[in-house]
Length: 388
Length: 221
Image (cartoon, rainbow over all chains, first blue to last red; front, side, top):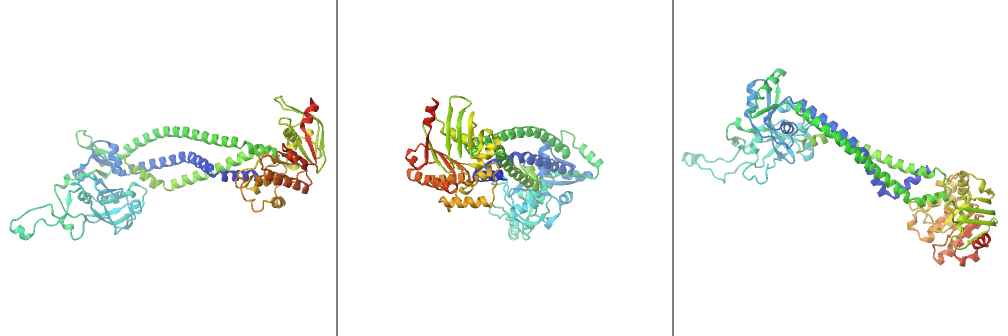
């Protein structure tokens, strides 16, 4: 007890040094565990979502970009395809196609333009409100709603795709009509709207004041001018003025999420996209993610080795620090000896000090690991949605 | 209290040899040890406290034959029967004055810290003019106050023999006198014998007796 008392007094007096030692030791202990935990959770999250998505159709190019963008709403951007890709699946009668438009963001959250089928397909429930029903309505993922402090009845404005794109995308104010229940998936961080709303943000559809009055039309005096007010908010009053220019099948989407009616239909459908001359490809996310996970775990082995080396170096640094500290305390030990300290007193002092530091480091690292683990779902979803 | 007869000691590396034909100190006596540097004054204190062991001769301190004691017994003897006061005070910077006084009970062989000891430490601190300052760390005390704490630490175990190694060497003249007065007063109060190594010849008249190590060197020659 006396050794413990002296060790505590010494560590308290040199609290700065003690704190650094505890922090370093806690990081050495917790980093491998946290990495292991996050990687395992990431693997599960990646695999679960990939396995729950039978087929993706998108532009021929990087399968990984297509998968990461369509499943995890990451910044990886495959070249867009047209709505015709969705229609083609509809017409085949082999699967349910769900278009995804993921080009835009709002307040750091991805705007996912899709159809109501997406909510059924992902089995998403509502914490409050309802699904979007008309143009300009949006549904927030749980984490996005929490982060932005928004809920049903609030509004949210889309962000311009490019600050200097003056004649391109204009911000659109959307009404929030619902918030999803938390799922621990990238859906938590997304903002969902009808795909047509995404096209309005893209400028393909728009609403504005009448170009001509009836009197002017009767007089044959038809004109359009830059002074015509274009709406950046869709309301009950102006919704009827919104319209799209061009053929809907030519409108862009990022990918088509495909749910075959049965395995045979899925196989037939995939076969139709095997021709390398076709601009579209069908990918099986589970296969793409499987390759990615294999690669991650090959890199993880390397990371483990690096962590072990850094850990060993840090442990050596801590040991050296403790050793030097004890060397500096040689006069104190000499005094203890002259005052009649028992042979084991100095050893007990060393053991007491190291035990307290270790206990503090283990407790702190346990808290770090528990904290990270308690938020591993959200953290993993955030990590997976990060761009390259 | 101290009975030395034909004592011989040499360090393992060679070069220094101490020889004391005869030295006796009575209980309660206050003896000053003087002599040129390197004549073995501090070595004598080490031998008297059992830190070093004589190569030959007889050394009895407070009835204990130090040559016959094991290392463990000598540590216990030192902790229980000897009080040390050092020139550099040797206080621990991370402990308060109160805890520095009680330090021998934290590390000493066979010493047990209880309420009686704590009370004794408080009385000692008060008697040494440290009231209201026992909660401070050494850095917050003056040199004189630090040496008072060191004296309290030397006396708290109620030792039979107090060994002071240049105890006033680091103090200004006024404080030096005050500390020596205090040391004598507390030694008297505790019925302890005092053996003090000093280079300060102005203080020698205050001691009962002065032992000059130059005599031992002459005798050895």
